[in-house]
Every structure is written in C-alpha cells, then in structure tokens.
Length: 244
Image 1 (cartoon, rainbow, N blue to C red):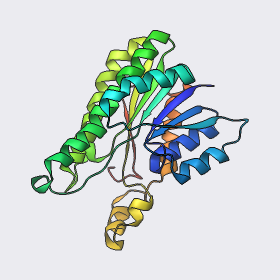
Image 2: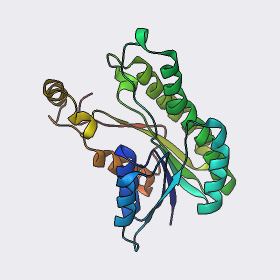
Image 3: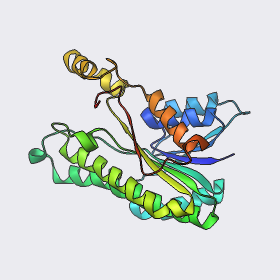
Image 4: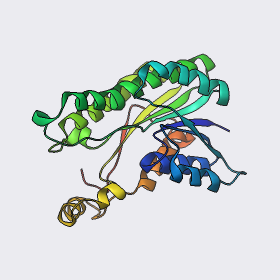
C-alpha cells in the first residue's frame, strides 16, 4: 500500500485530500499540530479494507525539527511514495501596514517549511530508488496577484518556481514534482465572504461557480496515479475558470 504524507491534513483542503486518498487505497499520514474532531471522525469512517488514515502531530513551523520528523515517519511507515505539501497559512492586508513578524511567519510556514520537508523526503526517495511524487499546493494568486495579498502571493509564487526547478533536479531519479493552484474554493472560509464579494468571484469564473475541495483532491489523486507518469514541472489550475 503506497504511503502518502499530507501536511495540514486535519482540516480544509488537507483533510479533503487525505480522505480522498485513503478511500482510494493509499496509506495516508496526515500531519498537523492537532488532530481535531473532523480528522478524528474521518479516520473512523475509512473502510479498513481500502486504505488507511493516520494522524501524527507536528508543528511544521519548527524547521529544526523537520529532519527528525522525516526520519521518524520513514521508520514507522516505510518509504514514502508521495508528499503533498498543503500546510500553510493565509494572511491578508496591505504590505505597508503588515507586521514584520507576520511576514516572517508566512514565509516560514508557506515556503521554508515545505522546501525543507521536501528535501528530506526526496533524499529518502532517491535512496530507495523507487521514484515518487511531490505535489505542492500553490494558488492562482501566485501568478495573477490579488489586492491585499502581496506577501501571501509571494509565498505561492515561490512554490511554483520551486516546483518547476525541483522537477528538473529529481526527474532523472523518477520523481515527479507538480503543483496545484486552486482559486477560491467553496469552503467555510468563502462562505464568510460578504454576499456581493462572493457573487463577484462566481460571476468572474467561466463556469459561474466556485471550485470545491473535492476538485482539488481529485487533482491530487490524478497526479499521484500512473495516468500522470509523464507530467512533471506543471501547475494544474483548479478554479472553475476564474483565470481563463
């Protein structure tokens, strides 16, 4: 059973991805600071004859602890077939008034943490010689920009550049590296938008609707599958046509 590590897997997109992969027969390790009720319920729902979903606690902003985390996960679950770098934080606000500490926190968790974790996972994949898949969760704001999201957009643009360059580095070892760039996703967060703002986002999309977390999870599943064996260094946009 292939082992897949999903960061930020206790809620939101990460939880949707973890649930989808476990239901499709993967051994999924969801890493987050706390398990939470939603992940706990999801673990109980996964049919035992299919895949598995396991939680492991870790604070990925603690960069110095990432090498140990990677070693422990490999020792417990064996070689990882895939890594889904989903954990991250969002922060809105004009750059001119944003606190320096908030900018540093964004970059630490959204860029430095996934790059460092990927380093140690890729090392193990190379040592095992069986290839693997790395999927980075970016965002459409990484290439379109958005008012009030300058710092956040910078972190997502960084992940897109990281994806394309790493694909070149590790491709000869049979490791595929891709990114998924969601737009506004129909989640609890977008339901908190004012009616006019939400309607504006929907009108701007080609399909006149918001994409859903399940759509992103389906994209992850596809990129992990043999059907995507010759796709690497790409950015898959899942936004119901907002950027069409």
